Image (cartoon, rainbow, N blue to C red; front, side):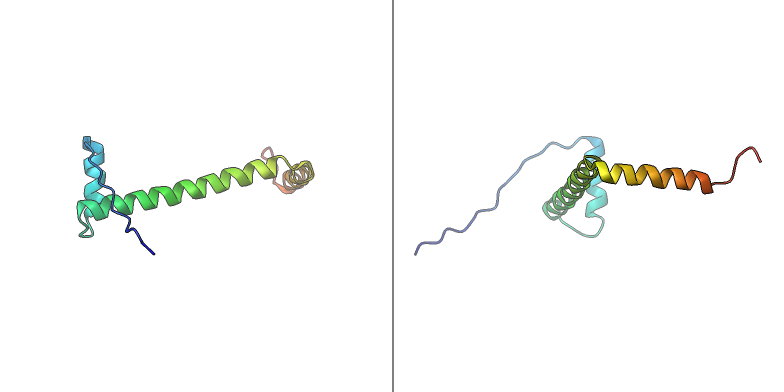
Length: 87
């Protein structure tokens, strides 16, 4: 059985001043340019996955009529417990 080894993909980028400064921050731990870029890409992808997951949860919850009604009731109860600003 033949197995093919996946070759690393090479990427050439032109950095503006802000991106160059960001690369310096990521490299501060002693990483090479390549290691820093790979690290930054993985971290950015992880943040995007989290935001996407949160967005999906918000959409799911906002579509749940029962849940929205429960939240309305809780808000009303909290408002009743809150001290009056005019007192």
